Amino acid sequence: MRLTELVTPLKPLEAMAQGQLFVASDVGGHKELVEHNKTGILFKAGDRQALAQAILELLNNRQNWPALKANGRQFVENVRNWRNSVANYREPYTRLVKQA
Image: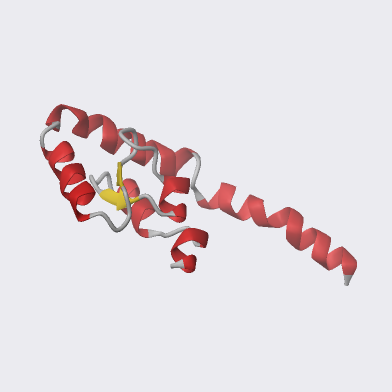
């Protein structure tokens, strides 16, 4: 679906902020947020076998859980926080106001 390729979802950010493990399909918005095997696990969208493999990969590598959780939390705190998100809108809105 075009929307899932263009819109950045909040659920992965919420999971990372709460220090949770998760798997996500490799659609556009997820690929923007999730670094495979660092902040979460990505699988090929629409592929049930890939989803099952991703879940098994996560379950079979418990030693990676603390790093995945910490990396995700750190990403939200340092990169995808409100300060940085709002800063991304400042320039386009300033430009629009000047044009009006």
